[in-house]
Image (cartoon, rainbow, N blue to C red):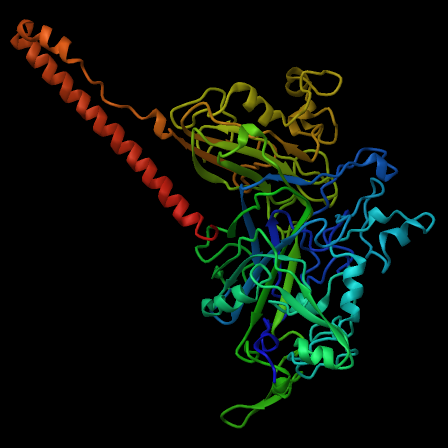
Length: 628
């Protein structure tokens, strides 16, 4: 008899329902392409997304670089217990005309395997790390003369894929009329030919919760049917160990049958330190690869990262949609209910031919980030709140960046207290398409932060105003504006006179044009800093803010912490007694007026702080409901 775990699958819809990660940056199987389309859809995983999506690898591209040793690559670094706004866009909505789930997971080096990596460019020309890794271990690749194993990206490792190839596929799963060309777990309804995508296991990719080995740790399931949450939670490896029968003459789903058939019943222990959420899926307009249902905000899930350091982590997002024709409960006994391009009669007996590909009714789409690290907090940051401020998007106009987005800060507005810290961290690439619009050296991403007066303003603010308050020290603002460039070194950067009077400001390709951030590296990471002021600061990126059509702007609200609120002064009784007889009528009136003003001030302060705290609490209620 079939158990429920084999009945379950996320069967997901029609063609072209792409999904793309924007923060942290998704790769969509890209590496160092210098074109708008990626070269290879099989490089790391099976995305089934449009080729134009994905961000380039986070590496620099020095002039004359002829070997991987000339090129530096970077990874984002998030402090333990900080919160990352995970942002993505998907082509179709959730719930209006389909059943939908977003599955968010992550895994790190030592869990997926060893030497987890993005792939490393070999020279400055590009298109050198876009191939699929050969079906060999790193050690086997190192033994091949002239082969650099690290030019290939790798998430799951060689041994994991071999176990998938040797695992008998789950014959109880729905396959419609697809003719699977083998009986191992690399053959599925969506991958009937057993194609290889990096070292991903196709059956594990297509079904959740997977019944056998999966080294991906669950972060969240966002679903249109939350009645399934107890099932997702109980069958997540965060809460339950997994089992499979290795060997044996017949596929078995329980220990007794496995051992009778000569197999070994193997157990995978449950994960520790999980923070798994199951909640409602965000909605979005149909066929709008952009904002969410409110039409002004991206789909976002706030992930509180683990409290232990990890290296070379990858975040994975799967977007699963199905229609009425492929319900959640379908098994192999329903295979005859869906066929390719069937002819059906209408109620008026009119034959109509339907455009159905049974491999794509329900369907799963996927994107993954580049590698990132979760790092230990230093002593100075223990037990404090750290806000991550990052950048999403890439160089180009709206047509050129299609399926990605133009530049923006993440978040672009947030509220904090003056006792909390901000971690400014921006990452880009030097391998963007060479012809894409933008300021500065062709093909490069750069971002900085300079103050402006209002959100509608587009010129740097020299002196703070009541509408835009400088929240950080001058040295911090200097570093945020220069992002590490040696602007005082005349050999490396043009000075103000050369830029303005010598007309060097339009020298777009020169590395000396530091006013366009050309001397900066694609990665900027500032140690978390605490504001030294309260109020609201408006800021922009001076390079990517092309006025009316493209704006990269940031708003930070800082309110005083509780320790700074005013407390009433209490007069000593002795001083009151000694002054009783000398108080005149004018003095009484003066004191009365003074006390009245004092009470008004106190009420105003309390009301202001209460209002601010109310807004802060309201903000966090609206934006932190997705994590614990």
